Image 1: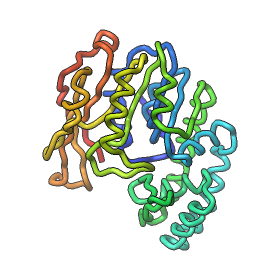
Image 2: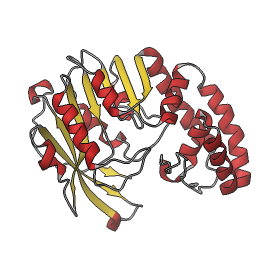
Image 3: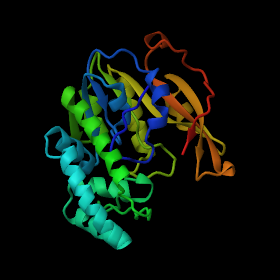
Image 4: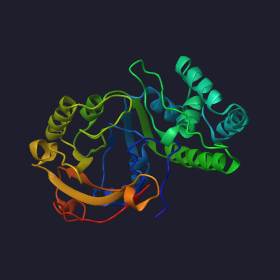
Length: 295
């Protein structure tokens, strides 16, 4: 099945895990709530008719609202990136830093997209002053014609989805989004992974993990939570200390850091839910032990 790839990248993006996540999603008759939107790749591939996406990153939410409201279009983005490509090719790292400074002084969706697609590893990271601080990827001719076309196609595809469906994008905390969900609704949570080295717009602490647990434990909606289970060095202690009362399914895959075999790192992902396997036609509480290569 062809995947809908969003134009904004971020660490922890679930593109390679979509097929595994999809089989855990029951039939949704109410609203899809996603309190940790990030890239939005899961919601954009499950394609519920009605959805509310939330995130604490105001730039991400503004980007998708600008698409929804027609302030950001494939045509306007194409023109912008073509112009910026010339300047980036000439100025390289110096021009990238110029755009980053410009964005931090006057945030806007065009520069946010530029930085996201020109920065190192497509990361979204801000310092404690709220300033975007990821360095340039240093790839030559970063916005080549083919790369711009790829981005425009992604924007165009997501634009069609947003305009066809009933989707809202809200800059708020996960607590506020979860509070909106009720009977017949569905919550998909993909928070920053606890005890993993990660940096996004906000840090994720033990207090956050416990707060999320208590909210999901008391929700009337069905929920599915993405987290990590274990790697070759250690286990996620919160699986047993917090989440063990729920249904848990795991999936083994490998991350490659670079293209060398000896850089392969094993990881087990976990999906945690509060509904039964007969809602999804899968057998939960099993280790599927499949191998997936992520680059």
